[in-house]
Image (cartoon, rainbow, N blue to C red):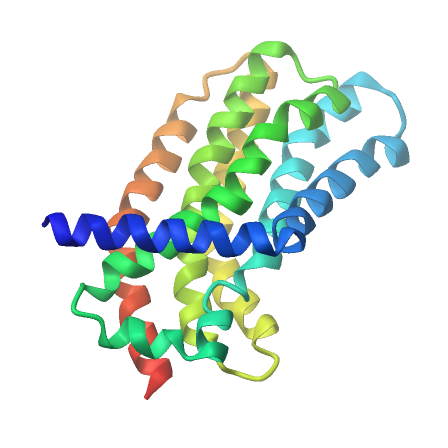
Amino acid sequence: MPGMIAAFVATTQRELLLSLRRPGDMLNPLVFFLMVSTLFPLAVGPDNETLKEIGPGVTWVAALLAMLLSLNSLFMSDYEDGSLEQLLLSAQPLPVLGLGKTLAHWLVTGLPLVIVAPIVAVTYRLPNEVIFVMMLTLLLGTISLSLLGAIGAALTVGIHRGTALLSLLVLPLSMPLLIFGARTVALAANNEVYSAGIYFLAAYAVGALTLAPFATAAALRISNE
């Protein structure tokens, strides 16, 4: 058990250091998220009710697309430099190592989206009490998206032009997240009961955290055959 924890921590640290050496991989999804989210208020006008109505949906769509932008590189660098084979041959369980890489991906891509969400919420004139709900839904949703994306990235690693196939694999699984995430924020903005959406997103995240590492490991083995 201590060896597994050490391997998990070491894998996460390695991925974070590699991401710091490639700042573009960190900034591209964040800049895309901010650009898409903040351009809509300029297009639809300053009407408060209109902005409040479209804000949750636009924010969640932008977050989903921003996460998809970075998924293709999750295992690609390991595949190109040969370190993916070392992961497969490692004495430590492959699901643990894959989970470490997924955690690093979320810290670099998903967590920044959650942090800048209040800026986006202000552009849509959302009330202050709704900002916390938006951040909570994005927190749970981006965790699930990273875990689901890891499965798709593992299946498509090494495939020429695998980005389109990756999107086709991940998008159907992420639709419940998009629907419940946007709807939960919209209910909070209208002062309606929204707790059911939070419970669903939390349950989805727990389910993904339980199953996705094993599915990712199996997908990596299949792709490497």
